Length: 274
DNA sequence: ACCGCTGTTCTCCG
DNA sequence: TCGGAGAACAGCGG
Image 1 (cartoon, rainbow, N blue to C red):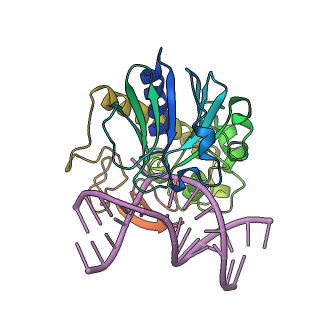
Image 2 (spheres, rainbow, N blue to C red; image 1 turned 60 degrees about the vertical axis):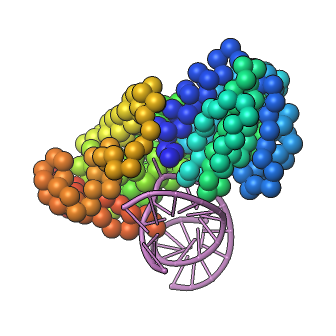
């Protein structure tokens, strides 16, 4: 599920669900690796209203007015769902019981997600957060900021864009989408980009993230559920072998940093002509 | 039955 | 120290 746009949607969803409500009981599931080194009983000390809900990259920082909070990452399959009290949810790893009889579950089948409870005052200072690079919304993403963040990487451009210590929030899908919008080959080296390409890329990243948030916010309101066989919502991701939506050339894919990269060989030439 | 996967972290190797 | 490859985590869907 989660790259920056999905996490941002989850944040807004939590704010809506918790609006005017209080947590009357916080309940970590037992025996799950969701809490890793952290202390699950600290999660159980969460109470009160949701006083702050921030996002840094793909991380959520939730603070409650009882003074406790939590850093949360959705991993690959984490999501929040809200259910009536007493209804059990498969793969529920933690629960927030609200004073209106509803329960917010953190559902995460594959257990790649993570919850780190912490006092609200310490949330933003946690090492995990301190290690993140710039957040495109909280910090902005001008061409200059983009160059400063990834310009010195020796890795392939797409791999560098996915490095959370450089830019926080892009994953496999949105890095590919942004490069397609910018018409830049994913295996270009950062040092080879011209100024106009950096400008295009900065603009493309913002456009990709804005679009992702807008689209999913709409789906969220519509109570949209992913139906089997629903069309691929992305411009380039997952379209290998089908015509490029811009020029009709067959979309190609290859492996980069252990992940599949999709691109259009015509729109995103390895050797751009100037 | 096998493969791949919107993420992170670790090990091994050059 | 850096970068690349591969694995591990665990479940589901094609």
